[in-house]
Image 1 (cartoon, rainbow, N blue to C red):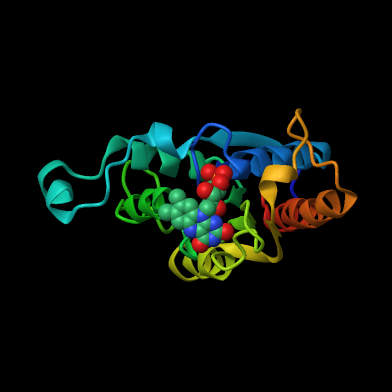
Image 2 (tube, rainbow, N blue to C red):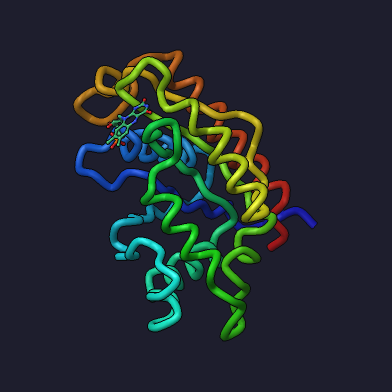
Length: 200
Ligand SMILES: Cc1cc2nc3c(=O)[nH]c(=O)nc-3n(C[C@H](O)[C@H](O)[C@H](O)COP(=O)(O)O)c2cc1C
């Protein structure tokens, strides 16, 4: 049965810093997703207040509440639009730490486990950097992480925005048509696939 309700997407930036280029790119993508009929919910990973993963802390205090908040958000959405910088060619600690904590949650209170909640949901991945490569080296790693560990369907298209410090205007829009097209390919692909796999 085709879905009747709009696609619901979480929009996540792997950088929470003020003025983050990935935050800007994620928000530009979110506007395109809304234009394509999706409902979007921004997620501030910093606001989850997750400490660096520590097995002793987990043994003493359990998984922090912020991870459960992320699980509940994922449970209520069909997919994610994610933009992450690369730090020394890897996805950011903020992103990985958040999802690592998520993966520690067992099924509980009628909710699936932290890796079951993501399984079969769709992801579109982006990166932005002031550098020449736009963070593209981390994208295969983000893809592998979300696919292999979280069972997500990561759509084939991705977009790495190079020289991000010159790419946005004062309103956070992308003046370059080439950039807008590359972003739209990811966002429209994400909304299309999420609508196709959605069952409610
Ligand atoms: C620890 C660290 C490592 C970085 N490594 C890379 C890198 O490998 N490639 C790259 O393009 N930029 C790298 N950068 C620069 C980031 O792309 C830049 O800080 C960018 O603005 C971060 O994204 P944001 O604007 O969304 O916060 C690095 C920055 C930091 C702090």
